[in-house]
Image 1 (cartoon, rainbow, N blue to C red):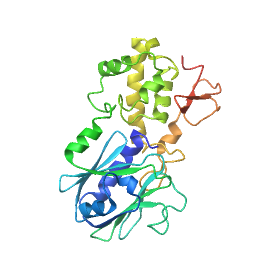
Image 2: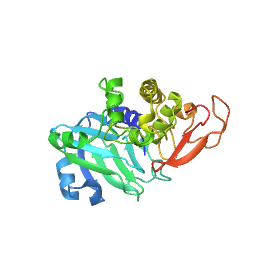
Image 3: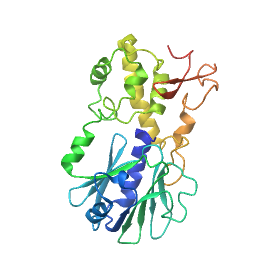
Length: 288
């Protein structure tokens, strides 16, 4: 599943190509993906709507419409958005599905959006876990309020971070940071990377962290997210940038996805275990 930097990268590029476009027709093929709308109602309400902007909250893509409604999109594990202009190169983001960009719409396509200039946007999803929600401003606010603080916002101060971590002192660091109700957008990649940079093991209990360690962890969460956004995200097996290329943060990964490779700092083999339901990567020598 793409995490905050990947969704942010995708949103910035989608905003560039979608803002100002007006739909002529819309099709939805998987009813559960658009609940509580019906396919007919979804298509009818979106027909003739103009897109006023694309933004993000947590891992959710927010497409603002000219009538005050919003189309929320969550790619989940295998979702993919493909923008096909009338002329020029396609714009692709999300899970790289084999042959997913061929002969659109295809067997992976769950929703289709066509625009007045002949361009089109396709929502593909191999496993059908992703979803689209057409909501009012009030419903959007309610849904997004269920997510925690944005770690790149001004409100994400050290004091606020300490308060959030203290809510569950007996949880491990990784369990706490993966809780989307506390901190929005963090996932497996950036929790592992931030813990490495802060020099703390992700399996430690929150209560065991000193104030100095909490301060380092807070600082490194922000730093690793900002660096990844500058590098256009990480390309794991299930993510591509919206122009179809791979993100540049792969070269900067210290632990995630590196298995038993040598630590870039100390040269000792890295460790990978299952923790908090995820593959978890760390260095036993550099992290305590």
